[in-house]
Image 1 (cartoon, one colour):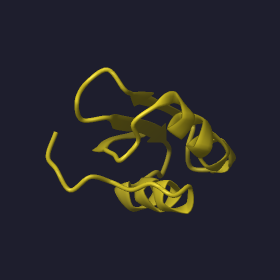
Image 2 (cartoon, rainbow, N blue to C red; image 1 turned 30 degrees about the vertical axis):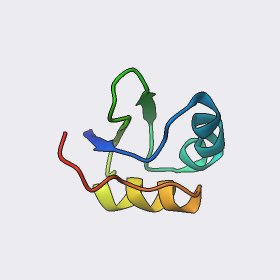
Image 3 (cartoon, rainbow, N blue to C red; image 1 turned 180 degrees about the vertical axis):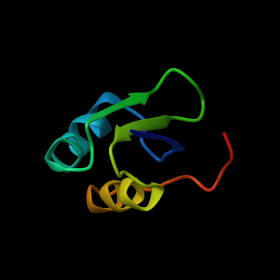
Image 4 (tube, one colour; image 1 turned 120 degrees about the vertical axis):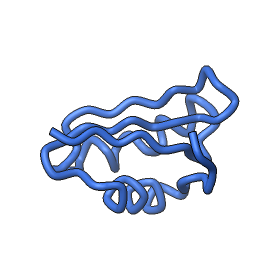
Amino acid sequence: MNTITLPTTLHCAGCIESIKPFFNASEKTKEWKVDLSKPVKTITVSGEDVREEDVVKLLQEAGYDKLEQDL
């Protein structure tokens, strides 16, 4: 199983609710969580064949994006 953690433009619980249908419907995504506790908000996604590009695409479909910042 692959696990990917990315910095995101998510910033609140409402953002998490907005992305929930996209990540829950993805066949590649088995588990996902968002960490809002730090200044740079991150999403961690686990799945069999999940890749960074898959996570970015789901974020963009939901109206968010990956931050161009290292963790």
